[in-house]
Length: 191
Image (cartoon, rainbow, N blue to C red):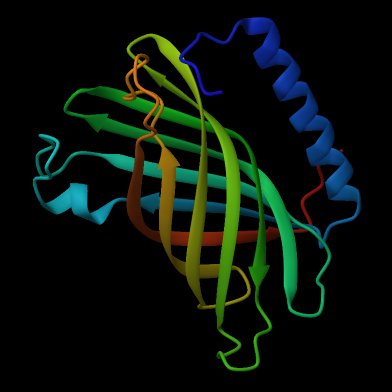
């Protein structure tokens, strides 16, 4: 199902075209809220790990998403994400071409300043001049400083098809924790 193979340029253009159409169609029915998340992996920033990565290894994640209309307990969102890490075994670049999730922002037992999200994504890892299709999921917890800025912690769970053996059917999953912030931009005119 997740064989290691190169994606050709024609397939990438089709995926990007579909995502652009989805972005603009969702924008018409959204809260006019576009958000950008910027995260860093604090573990790789301060300590050596079991895979040979030294302190100050950069591992950055940027999410772009559009929110749907507010529902009773929250809202749906979709978007894309980019992750870059300068890992010991080679540079790692992951592009989540489609990320879909739900944010709970009206939970009676929690403060109105706290919200949590869960998302699933399909991505492509570029490593060693090859492209590897993979899947992932994220969960985050945010503290709303204002309507525009939120401090966020994020747990990422990704199938690492780039390090799986093609001769073995065992899937390899990795988790990462990120800390960062989300900036909500409203009233964006895209057309």
